[in-house]
Length: 469
Image 1 (cartoon, rainbow, N blue to C red):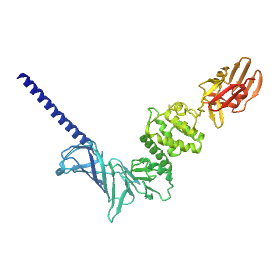
Image 2 (image 1 turned 45 degrees about the vertical axis):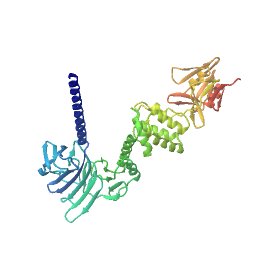
Image 3 (image 1 turned 90 degrees about the horizontal axis):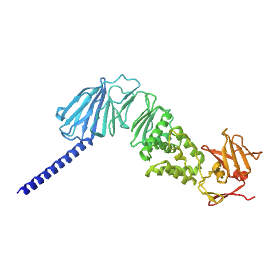
């Protein structure tokens, strides 16, 4: 009997626990649904002598589900309709409990005296625990019928009637800002992904607009105006002139690069190099600009095109300095450590150097040497190559002279004078016989052969072989 009672109690505990768990899951789902609720909004605004009169209507609400929002800082005479539910105000906060799926809040906003332009950023209610899926804004202008209103919801439909101007704006998300300007703006490019307004004589570079289009998702209004400082949102851009559009294009493309590419931690600044190629001009820090310039200088036109295509294909994996070097090496057909050597943004710039990828042997022995390939010429690391040939290489205290010795031969190379001395006999050097790449000295193949009497065979491997004279 006792055993049956224990089993029964255990069974009841399990059932109760399951019931509580199911209730908790339901509560969590309800809570998450509340937080992720997508509300639609219809806003009616009238501009009259007193300022703005606003009726902000929320739709697709959950009956009885609280909704919290923030009122504009300068909102006056805020009220709700009791037949639609309950609302309470505390400072700028408002809590709404709708009885149905619709709830309206009305208020007024006193505007500053109108000059030649007005920019309103804090005029509408902003949701706290939900997102505005879509907003329709009806704007009635009764007070000042000169000039024109614009909204960051995007392009407007405008009707000029006998007594009022009527605008309708609509788009995804919050209503954003309102902008009014007295000096007339003409539609310059009303079609396409941009609706561009400016003075009739505005000079506009279409390439900048094309680049900006890559970073926007909806049709955007672009205003070329000197009446207000620059402003950028998803669907409204205020710019003074082409120069500011030039800067905006850079920021839009960089945002798109950040969105499309994943970079190794600490190397995300290299994204500006991709931005530079999308723009067709250097962008970002001085180091990025130097890297971009080096690549343009050392790649042929065909290689530039292949390199740009290689960059566009790097969106599938994390971009690292090593991957960039691999992609560049594949395009050039030569090895490089350019990005690895430059991956620390605040470290000094290292020049672009391409290395012949064939192994090098010296007198038949394998080495770790790499020859720099520049055009049709090869340059060998000076110290390491001579050491592999059995020479002793020493830098003298002045830092501009190298002493090279083996058996009975002694060489002195004067690095700042294009000359050397062999056993007290003076010889001249061509200007580019010795070169420095990122602080490391190299000697050309021709002068390596002439001075140190070796033959260099460039076949499947590179073989440096002393001549038996």
